[in-house]
Amino acid sequence: MNKGAIFPLFYIPPVELFKELKQYKDNILVERFENFPKQTYRNRAVIHSPQGRLNLIVPVIKGSKVHTKYKDVRISYDFDWQRLHWLSMQTSYRSSAYFEFYEDDFAGFYQKKYDFLFDYNEEIFRLLLKLLKFNVRYSYTGGYEDTYPELKDYRSKIHPKRSSDGEFGAYFQVFDDRNGFLPNLSIIDLLFNQGPQSILYL
Image 1: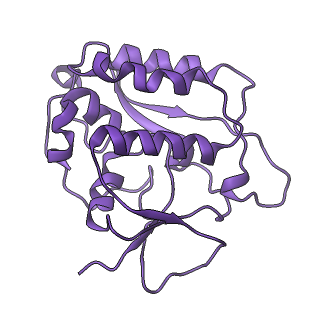
Image 2: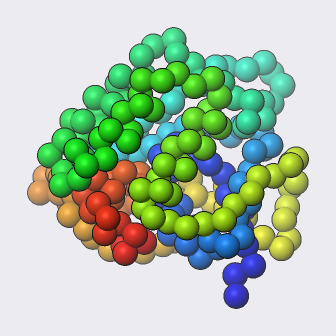
């Protein structure tokens, strides 16, 4: 029996995160107090563009030399990344089977300005759980701990520079005729292509 696991919050997470969440859905701890690690899915999502894999990165305000807790990391609006991300999603998924079905759910995240990355990711996460009809129970860390002996630790396990151990069966993707099937993209790739059937894939 799986006792539980600790996870970070990602920006529109990869499919892998939801596959792992499913194993521990009754006992999940969400990390808030870790020092913010760079070049991770915490501020990055990967979608299937006409040219292949495309990184969407949420810029963050560079802090002082002191490490910044994840919950305190602020989003930068020095350039209009929200418009860029939304245009990229439209270009990539406008012709997918379910983009129009979910479009209004996501549009607000590219119009409203959020101060903190954690809060932004948390609201997107809640929406994704709702759209996927994915029932999980989770709570938040109250401080930072190096290890949680009683929990499986996913804080550094799911990473854009690390190959996943999981298996990802093929499903229809908009540009698979030119790029082939690209596994473990952002969950929105699955959602926009498979719609309500996404939970069965997971």
